[in-house]
Length: 240
Image (tube, rainbow, N blue to C red; front, side, top):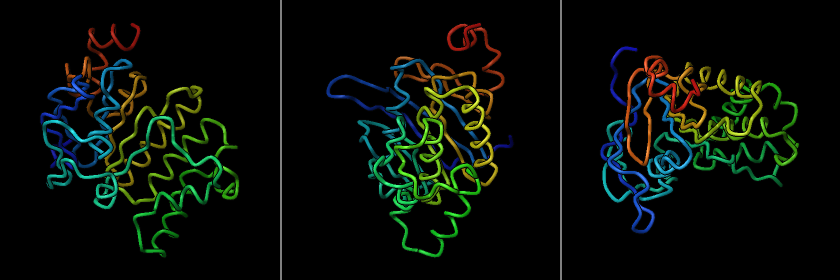
């Protein structure tokens, strides 16, 4: 991967829950054309990084830059309008609304109706198994299908940077493989991706670069394939 200007750059980010630090001095970046992963055990602070970057939490210290613009502390709506979208942990679908209605909500910041219709067709082409079920309630889909709906909904904002929080958690291996392939397809379409995962094996396999989070701090970073071969990472996260 050639060196490119970062689409997302995080510098010295610290976020507290009350007096308790959840993440401390986290720095990371996503370069144009990359899939980046952040791996770590449950409670390492991975979700807090996502929430702090995406405007759900306000960091106590540090900076977030999106395409060179300082967006530290911006709310989620402002960041979506600037090209950043999130697939949250647990999917957070509107279960009593149809697939079509969930997708339309993903485009709530957009006023270009013709563009939204075009993007719905484009997004559904990535998920052919969902296309015939536009009128199905989101709560009627299987867990794997709901995860696909969550990704599709995030894509409806037409993002340039996509953050995913534990996208494979609780899914069967065959669905994990499907989600992984979809993320690579999305990346190849020009969307830069950060995947936060406990499933380090899957994450390191699809990523260009990786960060390892432990106790709220980045303890290792580098080429994903190289990290996957590290004895420390293999023992701690890959069960080898």
